[in-house]
Amino acid sequence: MIEKKTRDGKTYFVVNDYQALRGLFAELLAEIQRIKSEGDYEAGKNLIETYAVNIDPELHKEVLERYAALNLKPYGGFVNPDIVPVVKHGKVVDYKLEYAESFLGQQLKYGKEYSL
Image (cartoon, rainbow, N blue to C red):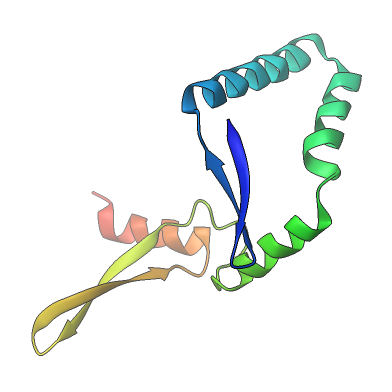
């Protein structure tokens, strides 16, 4: 279903069966909902210990190194980039992504530019 591959010193995960993966996600979401609904502390603790605490340290190091190369601020998932054209000799030749300094800065800019 999911195959772990290494190429040029980088780790990749290849999804070979999306239907099976969707089934696994559905099972996991159902279990999370059950834990929340029943207040099953032990099951919640086991879920966190399994998937969020006990991780492969080498893979974690690789992910951190690859992320650092992107030069992005952490937790920027809700900060949308501005797509800025690169113009040479009066023609658009490329586009670059520019990120706001913060989520608050982005929201203030949206308020200024798009408010009625």
